[in-house]
Image 1 (tube, rainbow, N blue to C red):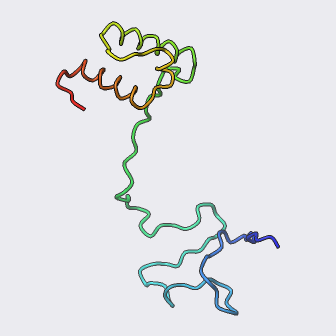
Image 2: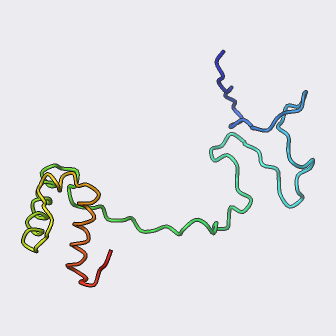
Image 3: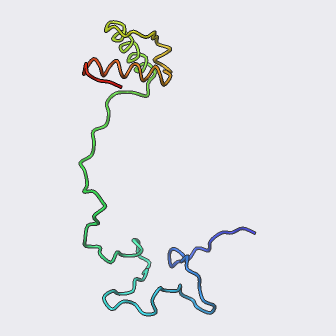
Length: 130
């Protein structure tokens, strides 16, 4: 037996239980609030309307201008290899005191990554401590 929901022209089915003989879903109150009109789906797109559709919700941040995309082709192997070669060259010329190779840079262990990042940060801030 398949448990598919029946599609209705009225929109989304209510998850509230129905009383026997009732054709509409149960409402939490027996009569609508006098300050609010009951909502009905009239077949137009958009479904339910918010009670406060003219107020901005406080948890929604204001729209930001579109961010510029990163122009670097970071998904390309050739670009990645080029970056690893430049990093290896820099580490060797700057006096990095741990063994390092292109293979190490391609798949660094957690310790290798930590050592490299600590070394690079100390190049910028000589007082940096881990």
